[in-house]
Length: 121
Image (cartoon, rainbow, N blue to C red; front, side, top):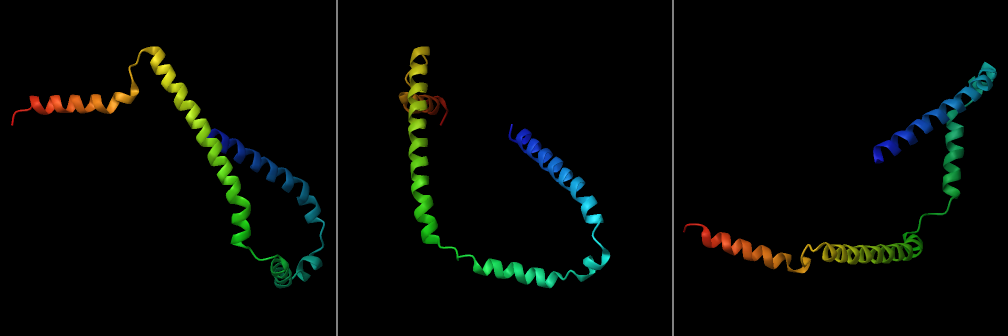
């Protein structure tokens, strides 16, 4: 299922990139060569670096204050759902007559002890 979703997302991304390229190639071909030769990547990169410097620095404290309460709520919700599913499974096994699941380990110990007695010393 995950692979199918990944393939659909990949396909959609490739189609989107192809559409953008198909629309922009005619515009890019109209740019005169003189303009292309004038373009200096160093100036572009310096401008980009200056923009990053203006952005506030990352604060782990602020990040944790915002994220940790949300994680706590999600954890609590997940625990509640797990409890509900476990209760439902216990009820289903009792209805089917599958025996008491709480005695599982005791039954295994009995079987193991019986096998140990049957083995020759």
